Length: 366
Image (tube, rainbow, N blue to C red):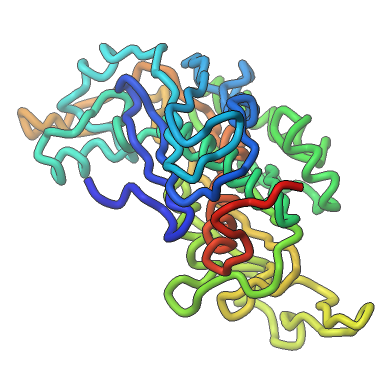
């Protein structure tokens, strides 16, 4: 397999499969001198773990992070950082029973055809959302790094099952992403979302939704047009998250229904600086950050594993047959995707900050 690394200067290489011994990442390019302990990463991983709510999988992993290299005396050394967690709660027998009956909507069939049947098919293998544990671990490092130059990242739920939350100030959204079970700042909408999730679970079905990511304190000029523009790299990172089927920056697709007079962000002068009065562009113009908060929305499809009869093909007999999936699955991935979205945002911003030389190879002690 190729395509397992993201970034040019802050390079994150993902490894592991859903039912393999471990999943994790290697980070190369992180400057020396960043204060880092396992607890910094563990806090992020705890946010990704199943909550016990209706929407979460019953697979319960402890996700205790192990730092194998790149950190000494609670500071990064400049060497590659190896982060991993063990897979302990696997039930591979569920997948042996349907090895030759690919699940509709999953990568089972295309992976088998691409890799000639040599892929690890247990739990989706390399295509499982389980690998995002490594994304979140790397994001914990990236968040600490970009925080040294004043950037913060948060994400929150803005839609589930077509139920949209009202727009809220950044401080409300940031708080909700930590304190609210669904990560939604609109309590009324959150109650309706929870009802929709309960109904989906009752009927053995699944639901999709939208997560909004916001980055504040982003300086002007991050991005390397034309092929490494900032919004393009953010989109690439988001699309590496399983179940993502759409990304928009700023008002996104709504801009196609607007006039230029409605879309353009008016400019003004405040404290001798040129600023925008609105942020329809979502903080990125011409592939470069413009100093406004970066705002992206990421659409997640419903999980494909549903507890309802479906039709598939038996690859041994090449005949259609019914399929009823057994296993432990999320009804809706949106709440658990919040720290993953934050992580990918922070990783891209860390990479572009290094590329712009806003961060040197050795961090200065404060």
